[in-house]
Length: 312
Image (cartoon, rainbow, N blue to C red; front, side, top):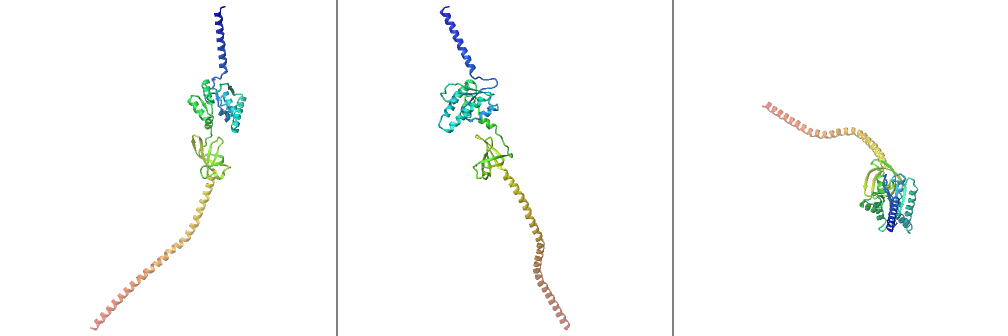
């Protein structure tokens, strides 16, 4: 065997070894499955913690991927002096452990490279490379991923879609926790976080009351509902009934008084007629006496003419 044959065989063996290494590495990397895509988990989702309930219900898919850069970011936050950030970061690490213990969830820790441009840019790059979905609740990362053509699973949008929608006229119990912007308004929250503004509820602050929904308002920040107290409506109905009865009772004495006044009113015109008749009679009496005087003068004139005639 000459040197050329030996070199050719060595080159073939080297190519075969490199090919086998690439095949083994490609098998170890996450790929798109037939039943769905793998989902990359962001730091914000792990800190939020609602992914545990979603995965337990079976809506998160069977393959979840947490990059090593995300775990390193949680570790960095957990070592900070800020108490709030440290607590949330430790909660995110606990969420990873809970997902690993679920039998129907295949959680993998992806050994990616150290992010140069930040964790968000690294997540978008990994999602494009492996054809995976990205689960995040970060508003800016959500917008950038959509621009880059990456499918985003936003838990906030999912929660918004699953909120209970109350129609006007429906009733529910709610606890009033803070005053509203209006003078007599109070604010409460439903179990899904929907804010409810209750009219005339300031006096019941800190108590649970029954409310009736009147209308809802959809905003960019979420849904806001308006309601009124059921007790006020019942009191209004009860208050309106006695008013109607008192109104009738008030008319009955008036009618009785009118019935008593009717004979007096009937007699009153007669008195007035008598008063009116008296002046008329007084005016007529002088007229009749004048006529009688004229008759008397005419008779005396006739008598005088008759006596003169007899004398002649």
